Image 1 (cartoon, rainbow, N blue to C red):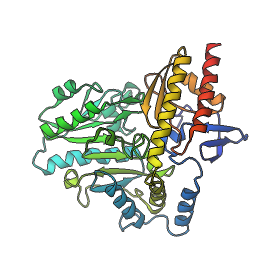
Image 2: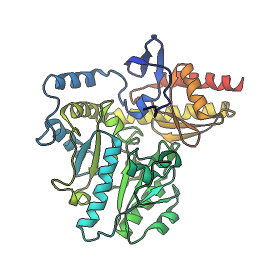
Image 3: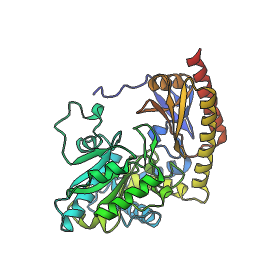
Image 4: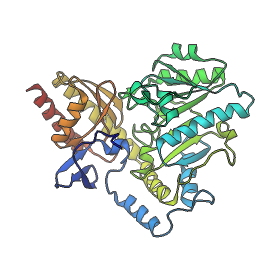
Length: 385
């Protein structure tokens, strides 16, 4: 189906932060497959993990125990708020699992009337009918109705609107700590802590969509850590598989009380191939100093982008984001900026609010950042010419 407006380029191989098209041209990959290729392209450890597992067994279904799934789940529990994990193939599936966890929790604890979820303007949670109903963006829902009911949307960052939206039917609050597709809009520490307080006051679950913000992207394993809060449910994907399709729904034992045998399932989710790669990705994310380096390089890049904005304000008006989840608000149409960056040898991703997302692999250093800034600067000069 022609559902994608694909760029006219085919890539055939990658090396670290670089990717090469079929004509042999090299691009600096600051898209990373939309924040998926956490360790870049063809990382030797991921290639080895996948190759080794491929020689053993690919798939058994979840009718049986999966060793890699058990080890990856245990490590995620040991390093997060969670007590339990459900593995999926994608972020949308992880988010759907999280929604079911929230509703089932209230059903099993004597409050079946609590099923609605408070969500936020410019949110993005995936492209299933329920996920687009939660996001309510016209470009996502137009023509696909009627939409599933159950979502009450308020302004991102507005605690007063959140409190006013709470009703006897509210089960949870769901948000991305930093909205990615919505334009790299960051929820403040006070806002996130306020949401936790509202959940505690009204007996709601705090359900975070960390599909893009998680797995080291902001310099912490998950972005909620910056606010010092503890969520009840988290949806994770993208970087968790380093390019191999993998997602996960993490939850506390309390929140997942209703998720008993037979209530949910997946044919492929968390299969041996996916979890072998997931464990290899986590090996690196948890290695001493890795996340600190993401934070350091992210701060360096943020400062360089601020300098760029001060120098090229006619093209770039604002820097947004944290760690290596960064965005530039554009004066020209962001799609035109993404296309010109690609023509100049650099990949990026458009987002809402006329922002260009910069999502490099987490392995980059200052050299690649300087290379990116030079391409951005040259691109800005071309717009100004």
